[in-house]
Structure formats: structure tokens, C-alpha cells
Length: 231
Image (cartoon, rainbow, N blue to C red; front, side, top):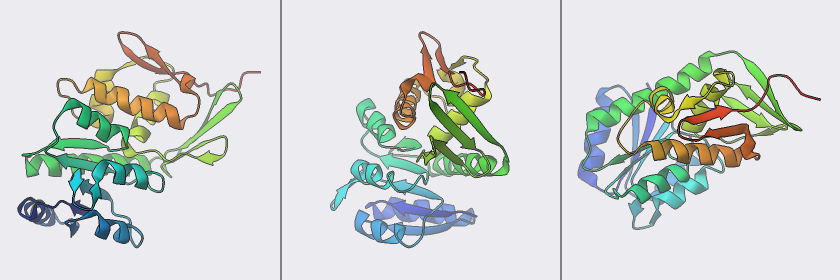
């Protein structure tokens, strides 16, 4: 059972989503505005945050960008804003998923389950690895779901963490956007290769040096770090 925050000013949809999740034995907290969520996050961190993008008291994109500085809780946007630029913005600010309204509540529940499974899988590992690139040292600890760059902890989203560990586990091999969608994000829709690019862009910015992840034009990406320091 997970604790899920459902934040939406559409009372009918919010109650329907909450009711379905409760039937799946999740603990659910409902909010119609962002103000209440801000206060709640100071008290308890949920396992997943389901969030609209537009509110009377603020903007969901800005809200997620702000909380990403403090927490890596998985975020799923549910929104009527359905343009490609809106979806890309959602991922750029740190969302793990983005669903367009009207939506299937059952599909939403399945995506929540997929995210929770990924998080739990990461916690089940007990490996700590160090990667080297120039003078930089990247540490990944899959059991603790933690990564550090030169001793400073990185604040990665669930999707970014999954992509990073997938790239490192492939030992320098090239992986396609389709593989990343399938293995790390667990969905594949036309046009969503841009989603992978956005996650990679965000991940590179947090790794400080963009050279950690190489772009293989026309195919995908490759992790460039080495498990052995080169002198």
C-alpha cells in the first residue's frame, strides 16, 4: 500500500481517482489547491504525487520545479493541456509521467503501480558503484536509491534515476530511445522519443558535465563513465 496525494480542482475527477486508488488499498490524501499540498509536504512525503497543471492559487509546473529542489518523489501530471510543448515542459520541470484528460483512471492506476515497482526494485538492490570521467566521480547506490557527484548528493527524479542506472548497467553499450522508453518509462507512444530526450537533458544538467552521456546520432545514448579511474 502506498500513500498517494491527488491534487486536482475538478472535484468529480479527484474523488473518482481517489476512490479507485482506495479500492486498490492505497492511502489517499485529496487536495483541490496547491496551498494545502505545500503545507502537507512539510509534514509527510507521499510515495506518489498526482497533480493537475492549472490552479487558482498557482501553476503546477512551477510548483513541481520548486519541490524538485527538495524532494525526488514521483510526480504524474494529469492535465487538459495537451500540446507537445506542455508535455515537454512537464518533463523538463521533473515529472515522471504526463497524462492527458480525459483519462482512464485504470491506466493511471497502472502507471502508479509501474512507478512504485521501479522504486521498490531500486531499493531491493545492494550495490554501490563508482564511475569516473576526467576528475569527476559519480557514485550510485541502488539499494539506497542515491547518487552523488564528487561527494554531493544528486536530486534525481524516479525516471532520471532509472535511466541513469539503465545506462550504467549496459557497460558502455549504445541504447536506443525505444529501449529507454520500454525499460525505464514503461510506455511507448508516437512522439514520446522527445520525452526521453528531455529526461536525458535534465539528467545531464544534474551530472554537471554533459559528457557523462554521449548522444549517438540517429540511434540513442551511451554512458561514457568508466568503472576504473584513468590517470
